[in-house]
Amino acid sequence: MNVVSVNIARVVEQTSEVKKPKVRTGIYKKPQSCRVQVGSLGLKGDLIFNRKYHGGRDQAVYAYSIEDYEFWGHSLKYPPEPGAFGENLTVSGIDFGSLCIGDIFILRDLQLQVTAPRIPCRILSSAIKHKNFAEKFNEANRPGAYFRVISEGTVGEGDEVKVKTYEDGERIKLTTFFRDKGNVLTKEALKKYLRSPIDTRSRKNFENQLRQFE
View (cartoon, rainbow, N blue to C red):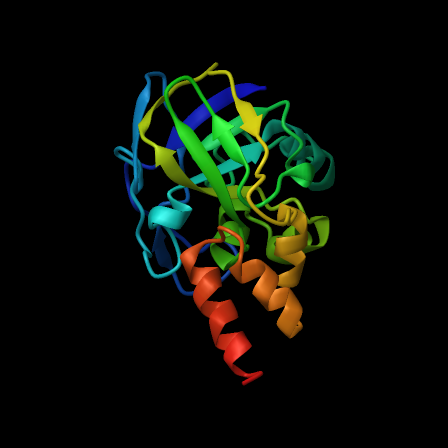
């Protein structure tokens, strides 16, 4: 298991390939040849434009697997290159379908904790130049993972990645979280999520839903 590519956006670009109007975005990330510093808010030099929905301490790093890219290569009829989905880290040898909230990626001098799946939007569809890609992304349930930084450090191409299993509570698969974010959840399910180390945006949403039961 290792890092295939470290990707950042140094320029905020505009996109409107499949939908109007144009919007500014930092989704177009390019591989870096040198090691990149990673702090609590993400990779140094990586530009994030819409901070209402992206970035922050609980979504500081986004990772996607080369194996999932291989799946999309067959579906899209062309092989997406690392960084195409706007991920900071493209990794290999890790089954994201088995990852759970709270699992930890341990790298050479960096530790990241899984907090949430990526929810697709029209920006991703525009970046891929496929009008209905967000729907396809949802159907495939291959969301990749957002992370919080629990130990700052650096990351570079070729770094080994080890996965430490979350053992401080119930294990919730990333793919289950991805599916549930679009569903109406029971009181018990909401409480289960709120006991786990999920991202702040999801936590606020689930807390609001739980109040409806009061």
